[in-house]
Amino acid sequence: MNDILTAINDAMYTYVLLILLTGAGIYFTVRTRGVQLRLLKDGIRSMLDKAPEDGNGGKKVSSFQALMISTASRVGTGNIAGIATAIAAGGPGAVFWMWLMALIGGASAFVESTLAQIYKIKDAGQFRGGPSYYMQKALGSRPLGILFSISLIVCFAYGFNGLQSFNMSSSLQYYIKNYSSTSYPLILGIVLAGATAAVIWGGVHRIGFITSVIVPVMAVMYILIGIITMVTHAAELPQVFASIIKNAFDFKAMAGGMAGSAVVIGIKRGLFSNEAGMGSAPNASASAEVSHPVKQGLVQVISVFIDTLLICSSTAMMLLVSGITGESGVMDGIPYVQAAISANIGQWGIHFITFSIFAFAFSSLVGNYYYAESNILFIKDSRVLLNIFRVTCIIAVFLGAQADFSLMWNIADITMGIMAIINIISIFLLGGTAVKALKHYEQQVKRGGEITFRGEDIGIKDTVWK
Image 1: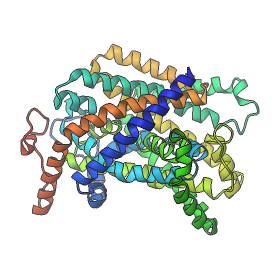
Image 2 (image 1 turned 30 degrees about the vertical axis):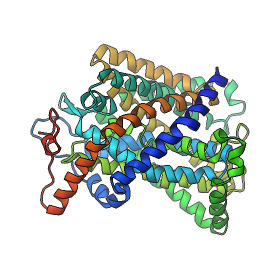
Image 3 (image 1 turned 30 degrees about the horizontal axis):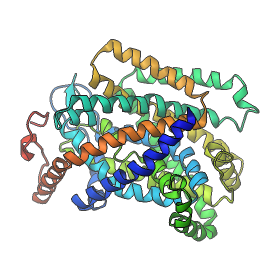
Image 4 (image 1 turned 135 degrees about the vertical axis):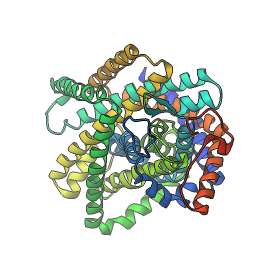
């Protein structure tokens, strides 16, 4: 089964997503005139805005909280184990392609999150939305929305969350001899399942609180360790950057097998990490209360940059200056990171990485769940169905702590790829609406005064923007 999944995985990323992802990123970068860099300052200002009061009561989700929910999902073990796996399999050049995907992917992230804001709905005093909603409302295709929702639910609630649980479990191998053959994976699975249940039954506000506390603190700490590592190994940095660039354009290696090249592995792991264009972050973006849809689109660009350009780069530098060589299937994933950081800053670094894995992975568990819940409610708004779904999510977390490494990566990669294909095609069709909203926003900024938005301003009816 795993061999079949590997073949599907390689074909999907080598021949389909490689073209779609890079094509979408370049296309939207051109159409928005590089909005991800040009209006980065506006995104930072919007991130700090308080949620506007609408007079209807209910708790508001701020732009920052929505950013932290999406960043919680992005900033998980993919930033640690995923980068180690990419470098072990594709070499240092994979890092270059991750950087590139983040830079051009920021435009796709802007478009999908702006669309999610435009087409969101209000339910019990809170906003909800995402790709399924704009597929139904803007494209007029509920079946396509349901197909996307199902693929997202399988990907995030079962694939990604099982993978996060597995990575937390594998980080304990360093401490416990013959870990996988002991009862500790079972015990950890029970603990993680219980902790996840306590959060997800608390609702979006508890999820927002958990992620807005854990993510900023851990991200700052992790980046600081990366900076300390680079400062103490400054002499090795020129060689490291040279190896990244050289390996990224090793065409001889590409000719030997595109699926295992730095290009494909870098794009694959980059997508897993920053999720730009995949259609996941818009589910969080839609929940924010902002004065203009474009504001949240700009904020989501920041999440992509935090994820890849800061946190993934920190991991990459820790690995590449260590002198430890990764090897796919032998020295990769969490053990590779632990060995590298031990060589860099000593034994205590291993404990820090283990703590980081648990903090990042747990915040991802609850962030991923939020995405899946929004899509369950899109398919059928039923309390019974929602509670059954929550139980299956808890089971996935429990089983993930005892799963096979390669099987979990393949399931996550394939379901992520299906999601991305559906979403990228949809935002290609709807991108003009996001561009109109961007022009409307820029006109208001140029004019000065309060920034407001109504659907009619860009020729759209039947929205919450009235």
